[in-house]
Image (cartoon, rainbow, N blue to C red; front, side):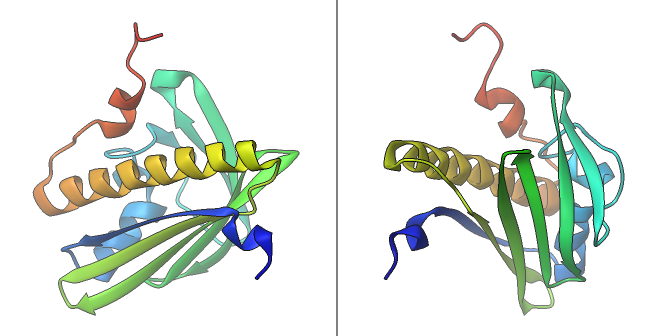
Length: 155
């Protein structure tokens, strides 16, 4: 097995909602902003670029959607222009009201310390995103997990 096979982060979660509703939550910024970024320039569409903004951090990035298979899969490329990574969402309906979501961030580069740092940060980040999505979709509660991960005033 090649060492680069360990150069990815993964987070997974069961969300007790139909697959179509869960899929929409990740492609429609009007829903996604309830649990992840604060602004999106548009709905994700295959072979298009979209800007996601986290206003609380004064940060934006451009994502390129490479694959969009309705209710099944999303694949985007994001990051600094010289260090992009691939993020893949897989949506697996377990029944008509339960969807298992798997998010993998791959293509991480650098020395082992940098890769370990990226894996830790990405796993933590996508775990918070999935937990926020679950709370919002199942209970209409906005937990503000991404907002509260780096509160103002904390060094």
